[in-house]
Length: 323
Figure 1: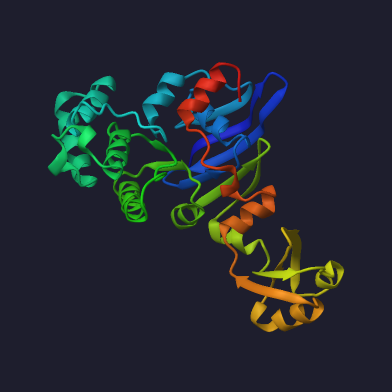
Figure 2 (figure 1 turned 45 degrees about the vertical axis):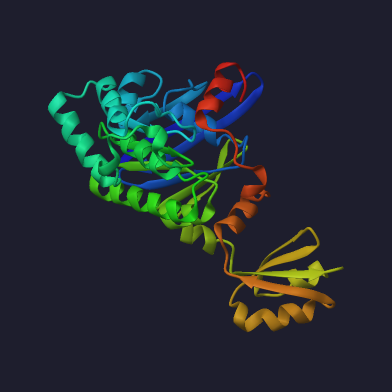
């Protein structure tokens, strides 16, 4: 059953069309990654789904509610963890949770029960009465995630949930998120610049560019779409036609002096590839990654765009007429 569904969703900023007739269907209980370069329409799409930006056309429903006509019901159905910190650092962890619960009108008995459950879930129960200003970055991120789940949202939106965290804290944060998905039954829609995380965590991934979904499938299927392992050759002048003529070669691209080819059953055909390219200075072989997928469908490496802005900053710019 689709929990998020869009039909011809569109957003314009003057003459600029940021999102083009977007059709998207996200199932209940799914962990869905929406990836795209800065300016591709990813953030604009998310801002419309969380009702921070009105669409210019089309229809979108979250938990069965129309984002344009029933924004209050949509907001009751969702939780949001922004890239930008929104905690009150002068309050304790428990007080931050309590404030959020009161804003959502949760009954006293229920809110106390949920706060206790979630603080245990993210291993902050022993620090719940410490001021947030004393928390590490990882602890603050975990508190933000717990707060986002406090009112039992049907859909949880995560904007770069582990950005800026050290590798160990990143791994622990994802453990908490997976546990929450399993125990809370929440659908998760996330953005991330860490492609390894998207590969590991997401049931499906949608890649958006120029306001359109250009690829949508499971991480495994997206990587398989490249047609084999990736062979990179450092060569001064590569005979591209000869490479493309090889039956095992499914794709050939040139970038920064390197020839990159997708080769099926590379263990059998690597010798033929090398024979077709005289003067090879260096060879690299690796299994396809989501970075390779991203490059194929957008022509850009994901990380070359930088970290980008958070949804809050983007929403403010959009409200001022920017993209």
